Length: 330
Ligand code: HEM
Image (cartoon, rainbow, N blue to C red; front, top):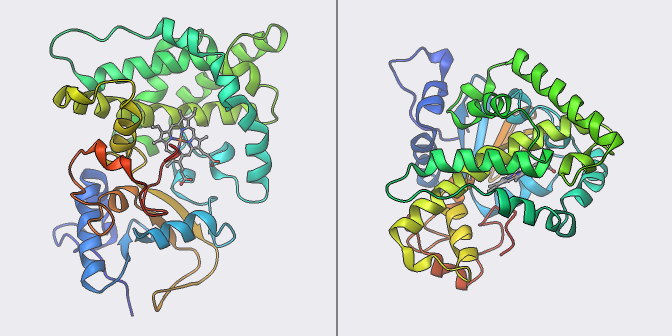
């Protein structure tokens, strides 16, 4: 029996499937898919994204997709289609993945990062007084902080801005090839990497260059770090402007958790099915693009009380397992 799916727009050519909505307004599309799935008592629905795709949103689906590493593979996932993310640890599968993370993790440990805190604090741009565009401020701020953390502030800022800009725009902007920009980024990384191989600086690049394949991981993690942190920071500023009673250092952890729940920057993630999978009485064929939706899980009324409301106080209690997908410790 075919999986339920959100309605197809009768005014677009059939071959495009759900792609136009995916580009223009993916969240309403996901809501419509979840409604169609729930109507059949399911936690998965189908999408046509130029190729067959399936989206799941229950904790059970999240757990399967994120922990059954031999069925759900990273190679061939959405990241492989985005030139920014197609490389390094993100598209590496088990068993090489654990090995690669093992060499990268020490550079990102709490102890290693604590050496950067003073430089980051010092270079934190001032928050403007009066009405402010939170997204524009967060964008500049995060780019600047990443430059300091990765490159001691020495990466060409105009190039960094050109490189990261498309990541904040809707599909298909991040998927378009930008060979000239990527080549310029590689040259800049090589220039900075060479100087560090002789004279290490207090930055992440000095650690990263010790790993094989460092240039790819530096480029990809830089891209992964930018729009995620920018949007989280912008939403935090926006919510705190409306609820200033939460703006105290003690309450910030709950604020950040709630921001990442309500506005998850990684609103979906994907894998590729390596074999046929039996799920809820249906067969999902090998080769299908398998998606999880952090957005749907984080706003599921079966998992969260009053899910669409910003309520940091909910973090006094732990959420159910696999209902909250964030690297932030809960
Ligand atoms: C609020 C900020 C962030 C959010 C919400 C976020 C979210 C995520 C999510 C959901 C994944 C898992 C994707 C998947 O496996 O399907 C991921 C992976 C990753 N993120 Fe982030 N991220 C954030 C910040 C950062 C930063 C600051 C960096 C780098 C300094 C970074 C680098 C990476 C890398 C390298 C991966 C791939 C890890 C692997 O495959 O082992 N992210 N991120």
